[in-house]
Length: 241
Image (cartoon, rainbow, N blue to C red; front, side, top):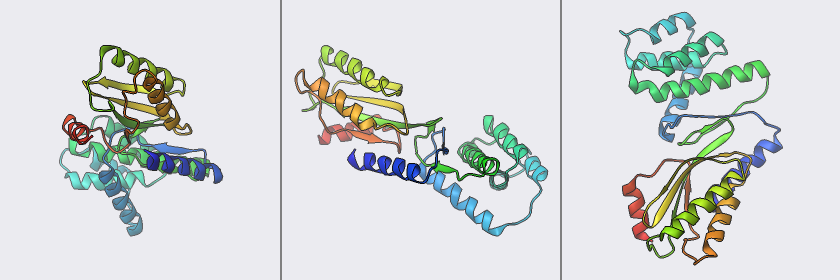
């Protein structure tokens, strides 16, 4: 948790020092590996600098006869130019992709096109913040896992206390709780929080407040923006104690 929090703090500090108040967060859940693949491909096409015609690429994108790989190229080319028509075409395709395999790619192309357009229109540097869980507006999405201190089962009263206290602390910081799931001896939260807020303080405050009534929560917890853990992955973590 401390490493992740330090990274966020350093990123906030860097943006403030450079006077950057405009940044973009991918809203969809796209694995980091696929995001990196997209940007490598994007950079390769930019270095090639091959001329293309926007309308021809749009026609290819919506053609049922073109290959997935060719459409991947079209999406990336269209995203590389500051053109509203290109952006709208990507947006239309992404809303209902003909090829489900290109859902993540079109999502990346859409945010990439938005960055190129914003940079061209504003004349200011744009920043993309990469996250496997994405975000919304200026909020980042994170997954948190908390366990009981000795992996003992929660009592009904403890479950009620956990739900009430964490909800109270998080909502004070303009956090959106998307999922709150309490199991026998652990609970998970999927949340969106403002980029400029120190969420660690609120999570620790909630843990400490609950622990005043029996010290039943482990003070160490998992906090990640890479992926939502499956039940099998959580079980392994819980069993390791």
